[in-house]
Image (tube, rainbow, N blue to C red; front, side, top):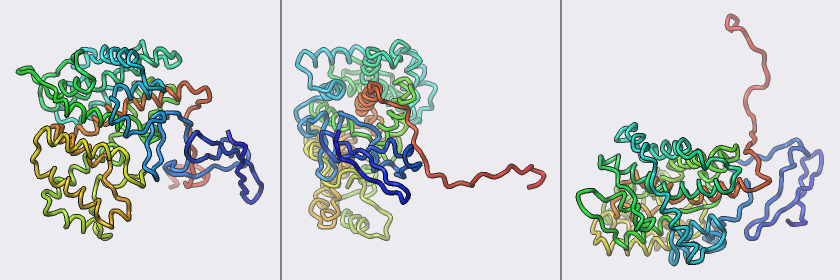
Length: 428
């Protein structure tokens, strides 16, 4: 806590408010007593200048292109760590020892199966239902199956529910995919890694053995790491807001999935791939770049630039390398991927994009990789939800563990009619 004060003069009185400092990043003005002392609220649509909580999980400096999980740079984690290790880090605050990681991985593995009645639940959806619609329903339904881990006042039950959600999300997502293509569900196997298991549950069929490609497995594991948490974004804030009412963790994560489904949030990689399909071939790129520069043309290059990062997205650096590893391993020759690589090259060297800092972001690369692996675009956001679950449960648990936590209750600037009297219908 800083001893500094911010002074507000609203024309009638002067009010001092404390300035708080975190371990890194900008200071904040503590306005919790603003209404009590001045009778006024602040107005901040989108909460872009408001800290809704304090958190020790993730730090972002968009201007410098920095993303830290518990202090560790995302590039180092993606290059040297695994998704299971990053999950342990987010949940517990420190990197695990070899024994701790092995125990954590075993715990998650033991929770990967879902209740058999859930397979019947899937059959209630239409075959063409979007995987995110299915995941919203199925994850919310988990609270009907696991009553023994919904007491949020019990730290042990919170831990069990966190493990269950992280473990079962790949199974739920793979089942959503299998249902959409009319194939039988594939049960998890305990001898595979978290990511290898998900690949097998998604792409294996009973008629033949499925072998996990280690390059693809590593690429998808990196994608999971890069999407594990991203500070107080829309879906994370939704999970926290739902959790602030005391809702059970399964309901809170279902709320996060619903928010993530929005195209302005989790659907960006799908939009980037659709844009590449529209461009088609490398020779058409100059035409589309010219359109992107034209202020009167509604066309925009998807997957370039970022609302938070005003510099190069640190997650994109890892993905840039991973794209080529996957292409080489799978011997990809699709013109779509050639178009992506050429577009990246031109955008990084074009003064217009450099000046406006429109660098390729993680969505540009992840969509290309997921498509090369064989995932349909409808599964992209479901994979995002799978990875983000660990961040959501870590944020939710941090909030529940905070003794100063209160139910969320944003204020508003009312612009409707002032009080007026009711008029009987015969007189209107």
